[in-house]
Amino acid sequence: MASEWIPAVVTGVSGALGVTFTWLAGAQGRAHAERMVAQSLEAEQRTYLRKERRDAYFEALRVAVLDVRRLRYERSGKTEKLREVEQYWTKTKRIEMSMEALIALHAFGSEEAPPLR
Image (tube, rainbow, N blue to C red; front, side, top):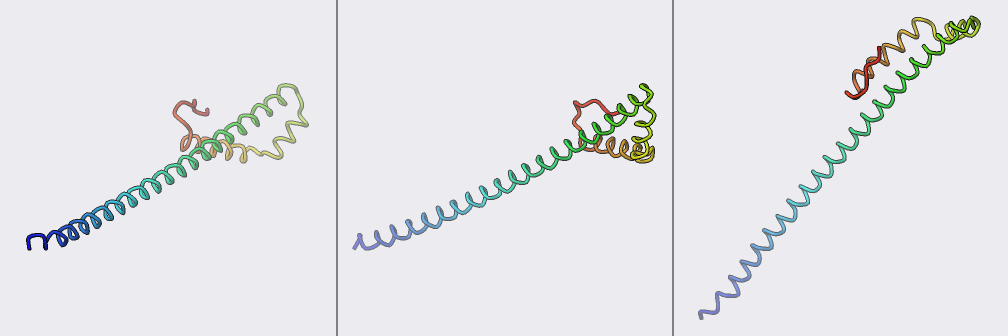
């Protein structure tokens, strides 16, 4: 008679252990899924910021190249070339380009990069 309760106790304990380990496995799965989502969002944000920084630097380079080109034409006396450049890139358009480049550099540029003047 003393051995009649052993199978019931063993079944109950193994059932409780099964439920516990199933819950633990589910919790680990949820934690893993949360980590993967967080890592995916961080990677997406890094990619976005890298693209914005690259675009800001390219815009600053475009402004600088345009200014250098205008100065070179002005100093070498190539008034026709200078007129062509200034006809396509009017003063208003150049100021707008400079402002956009400066804003983008302030928003997305790295601290190590010197500011655009």
